[in-house]
Amino acid sequence: MSNVVKLNVPSRLTDDEARYGALVATFARHRRAEDDVFWLKENAEILNVLESAAISPGREALTALSGFYDSVASRLSFFPQYYRFILSIALDLEDLGLPGQTAEALCARVADEGLPEAELSDLQRLEARRLLARRGIVALPRDGGLEERLRDFAARCSTFAIPNKKAAYELTHIVFYLSEYGRRDPRLSEAAETSLVYAGTLAFLDRNADLLSEIAIAMHYADIQVPQPWVEFLDNALNAMRVTAHSDSHRMDDYHEYLVANWRSATCRGAGFSGPIYSGAMRFDAAPRGTSPLRELSECLFLLGANRGDDWHGMRQTVGELLSPEARVVLHEAAAAVPAQFEAFFARFARAEGRGAGRSGP
Image 1 (spheres, helix red, strand yellow):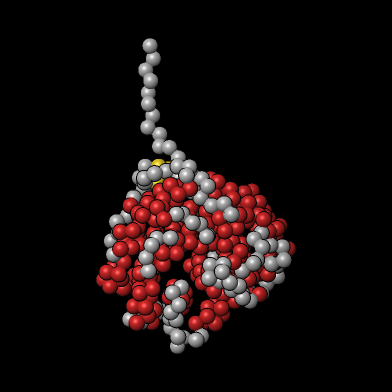
Image 2 (cartoon, rainbow, N blue to C red; image 1 turned 90 degrees about the vertical axis):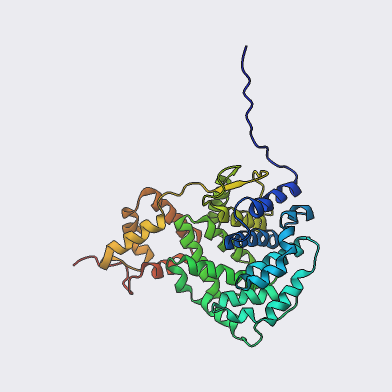
């Protein structure tokens, strides 16, 4: 006689509305408390992804946030410093189908109280302008040079040939806001388009699927073709993501990479969030990352010292011999992905102070 052991294995949801409802609910109810600013951040992000990717989750899928929506006016009154998160959540909930017209009054209050004027960051000022514009209100009307300052930042392509993740993420968000998340032509200059290529090359070398997903979305919004090696890397990274039901969702996980990877897939391929989704708490874990080829390359060039040159063709063999086989493959893939721009990228990345292929002698 054998004993039958019953395993309590959570079942995957298959109905779209149930799946999106579970996804919204895991951020609304199972990760953080509503009084945590990171709760605001995460919920603003999931709703922004759904709205920007033109995903219609259905009214029932949004019910986990209906209580927050009902109290959103009082929350804005008490937490004006978080107005961008609060406003973003309210706007997206309404635009995704939750009944109500509260967001318009919130936008008017934000403008009347001059909250965008308290922002020092041009990027946050542009975000505020975009949020209020969604209900027909003009924010910061006296700041006529706001867009041009950000366009100048985006056009300084040398910034994005040096590892600087903060600047790269800011670049993607400039494109998001200028393009209204793909609703209009952002009218990027050729230099700004080059900046996206440089930032993407660094992210590809770093095997950073989170950042590269955002760059790919920005390029899509700007009608720039995403290099095929980047697409293949991002597809593989998305397929390797693990979603685990009822695990320890309080530990840090890779939720942001999960969101932007699926956003990229939905935006560029028309198929996002097709992997497993469960009811209740979930964790989102990317595949483990090994040693960064970008780090190897940077260390290699730094140690070359006076023998470091800015000519890619002259330095290719020297650098390749000093890298691990894995890093060498990724470097060659990066060069092949953007053949028209890689030589100029490398000249800036090498920081060789105008030296060609480096010194050959003492």
